[in-house]
Length: 258
Ligand SMILES: NC(=O)c1ccc[n+]([C@@H]2O[C@H](COP(=O)([O-])OP(=O)(O)OC[C@H]3O[C@@H](n4cnc5c(N)ncnc54)[C@H](O)[C@@H]3O)[C@@H](O)[C@H]2O)c1
Image: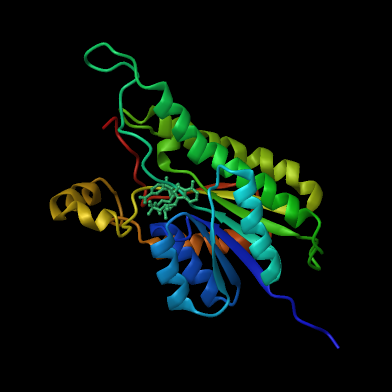
């Protein structure tokens, strides 16, 4: 008798604007999904809504213990095959390297931003890949795949974005090295660099601001949909020949200085 093993995906920031769309899409495709986030209320509502094959693991991506506990939740549901790293949040106000009054930018904000976006990504990547590395490979020799989230600010950081840009450029740089390192154990690593996406948070900025954001996108003249991010994430997770790649998802947008 053969028993079918459930493929599990873990999504950091799974209760957030982009993460929730990924959770919904992967769940719809039949995977079991772990929502690894800190937002108890939103995660709880999402899990209640989806019901079957989904669990919330309260996770701080910057903590080894916390990520290991989330990976334990994934292991209890089946075989961890996919990780989408899509957490984020506001760490501090944007500021120039030297402010107009001559004072230098806050080192604390810079460090915290790198901690959340870059260190958090690396922490989930290293611990998650270590779990996948000891799993059974598929017939194609693949043990798993990871999709991280950068931003087009990794390439065209705007005024005041030095911390966020440095963190996201770090994620871009990490992608190929991680793919090369993890080739030894059959794990692919790719990254999405979104432009401006119409997440629920963005919907609150008002029509005028939305129109301004949309007008700077060559085509289509609108913000990206979280579902478009989720569709790309699923493709990168499951297309076995895409590896070490960073894909812009931005309607050909290029950020200007401000
Ligand atoms: N939305 C956009 O337009 C856009 C554009 C480019 C890049 N991105 C990137 O995409 C990612 C997701 O963005 P979003 O718009 O969905 O953000 P969001 O704020 O809607 O969601 C982020 C989620 O991450 C969670 N989170 C915060 N700190 C965490 C931690 N330490 N551990 C675990 N979870 C934590 C939050 O609770 C939240 O649910 C971020 O990395 C962001 O930089 C977003």
